[in-house]
Figure (cartoon, rainbow, N blue to C red):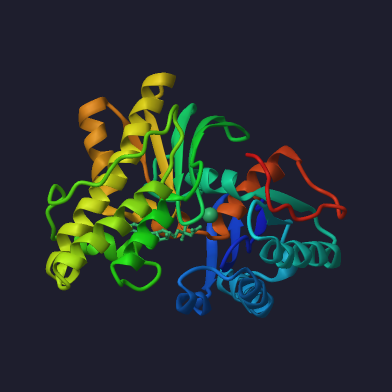
Length: 338
Ligand code: KG4
Ligand code: ZN
């Protein structure tokens, strides 16, 4: 059988990434994360786009080298068209267009949110890919969505956040506790040594399958202000319990909506993706759902859940097989629907 080599390029937020896939298998997946944002406690768009410009050539070079191919072997170039930060998207989009033109190979535009979901279809030994239909929950610092996936390119968003993303709920609460950015992984680490029922945080009242996390952030702020006033050492004395309680609340919110979505659609195949799917609480809850509700759950390898170009490459491959190419007039788009 013919070998189809796809170069995937991702630059929607603060990670510059390039990957080479051969017939849906990952040969390389290089990610340059931008440290510069740490000191600001969040992504600064202007700095992100400048760092992409510096990183994009070396990252693509390295991906090609690691894959053991040359750029002349490439059959097509897939890139993230959106959604994301405009300045960041522009870097990947322009580079992909110029390289496709120079190599005279097809160009494929990819929706970043579809890519998070289609990451489950990367050919990986020992990884059982979900059958259709399934529910996909994408949870990260930028996204919180539940999507009904009927086919590779037939998806409906059935729930999403009306304000902050779930990763922001972790990171902003962590900041209030004095933890460095991004605080999600630390909250998770400390949570495992604390009592999840030590403190109660309110769950938002949002209808349907939608999410809201901005109220929780405010609740955590008031809670901490009040407690620290009573006892200046409150945070250090209770850090594990606060993290455990916080995580318990956040994961509870996610799982409640997943349960509702599963009931409403009758679909028991549940897949997650995005950086927050590394969280031990959500992983335990997914396992529990298998026994309790008969779920079949899917969690890809960690490097395919955070922002990465392998997921862009797999969408590129799937579109290549359908002959779905884009032309040179394509432009980056900060907001696009799935
Ligand atoms: O997918 P990702 O790397 O980047 C985007 O936001 O697109 O996700 C990063 C987010 C951050 O908010 C980070 O705090 C969160 O994922 N995160 C976690 C964990 N690992 C990463 N949140 C909770 N528990 C974790 N173990
Ligand atoms: Zn993402």
